[in-house]
Amino acid sequence: MIHNFHIRIEKPSSQPKLRIILWTAAVLILGIILAALFYRTTQPSADSGFAVRDVWGHALIRPAQQTDFQKLVTGPMVDTSEVIKTSANGQVDFEYRRKTVLRLKDNTEVMITARSGIWPFRRPATVELLRGTLLLAGDAALIDAPLLIKSKGAEFFANNSLVKVEASRVPLSRISVLHGSIEIQPSGRAAAGERSVVPEYHYGSVDSKRGTLSGVQIVEKEDWHPLMELYTLVSEMTPEYLSSLVSQMKSESRDWDLVKSIRTDASQHGYVSISAQRERSSMQYLLNLYYDVAPDNASVRVTVEFERPVASEIVLDVRSLADEAAASPGFKVSLLRNGRPAKTYTVDRLLDDWVQLRLTDVLQSDCHGVVLEFAHTSSQGPAHGTVQIRRILEQKLELQN
Image (cartoon, rainbow, N blue to C red; front, side, top):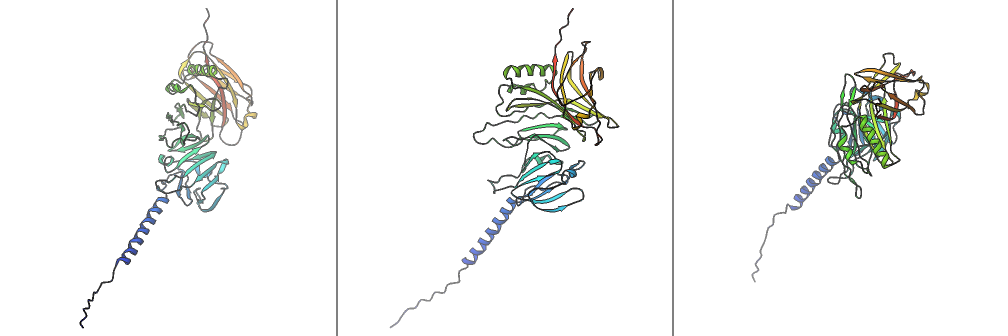
């Protein structure tokens, strides 16, 4: 009997090894992609004031050039796991957790929230200034993505400009340029069910030689009721306009009040802020301002210039919020005409309560501004302080034959 045997020789398959190689390569590629997504996308520049370096909680505070930033990054830090390096120039390299609050000098508190998630669901890191002042210098993009900087009535330095950012549900929805100029693009959207707020930016300018600050801004809050058309009137910041604005607001609500704040500080940045406030509404303006500190630090002279000359009575409600106000012997107020004082008023003592001044130019000549000169009795360095002017109204005077 004959049997037919068929012998088949098969080569060993290479598919299992190939699969292992492909899976290993895929895992490595995926790991590299994930690491790149988690690692911060932008390295801090050499003059950056603040930067968040990666999602695992590594951050770098770098002193800004030509600023006092190194003085701010001293003092205890709260909820930080480890300070990695502290250099002599004030640079602090530290680690932080998912949410970390840093307590810096002068009761400045900053909360850092690390980046989370992966693309396209990644949330950017945020730096929220809870209170105080934080100096930012260098690239303006530092304020944009990947950081959304939120603040509650605080101030930032960026590009050697003083920028005021007010907190809201929409990040960067209200920005005032208080010194210098800066361009910041709006970012963020209103959450579901909220009314979208479109930011309005009116950039200021500064004359560094004289310290003159100019610029106007009106900002919108939620429930901003019937005065939306004021956006078109920001260039008309004159005492006449303020007077009509106050009349309009008083006719619509009893809760309106006009507050004008003149603030000077030792860093020689000053600004004038006029706020008309209601329970959930506010707007702010910036007017021309410059001030001088006497060589012996004995006094501060604040000059407010009107955009157009006026010929009327001006009413000022003034009080001082400075620490040394109780010891201040008083102040002088002068009306300016062609850059020179035309009439001077003296207040013997500036107390915590409001002091009303009715400044009347009896000659009915044009008044170009107001100068306030405050004595400074403190020995704690350069003269500084805060003065609130509740009203600056032009009241038309009728000429009688």
